Image (cartoon, rainbow, N blue to C red; front, side):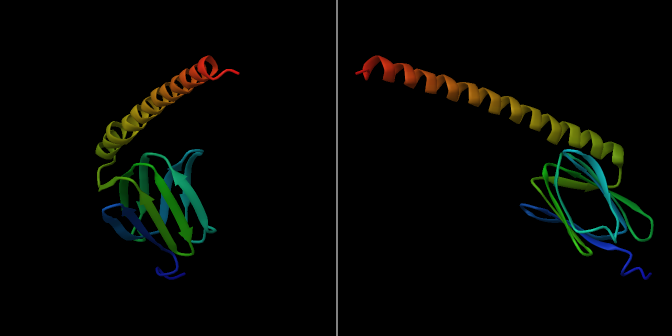
Length: 139
């Protein structure tokens, strides 16, 4: 098997442009159901991604890391494309892990709390409208 057929083309897209383009022999990413691994002969695959670290191994055996916010991964043949809301490439796993925890996971928790508060506000508003409707528009 040649290097050309033993590798995938990994491209990571952000809203502002391309974060990473490289050849990869192995890709590990995190979906809501847990981590998964892609190899060159893996079937075509689509997965939503959780905030976390995408790890890839080049055909030469070097490891690279990309800290990602939520996104989507699509593998079609030898092409693996990742689209994420935000991300940063790096060479030190420990730095990226703390960055992902502080920047993406904590923001996700804040987003969940804000959505819950908004839902409570919407429910209270609807209850208020319903009470007004019953009070003033009863027949």
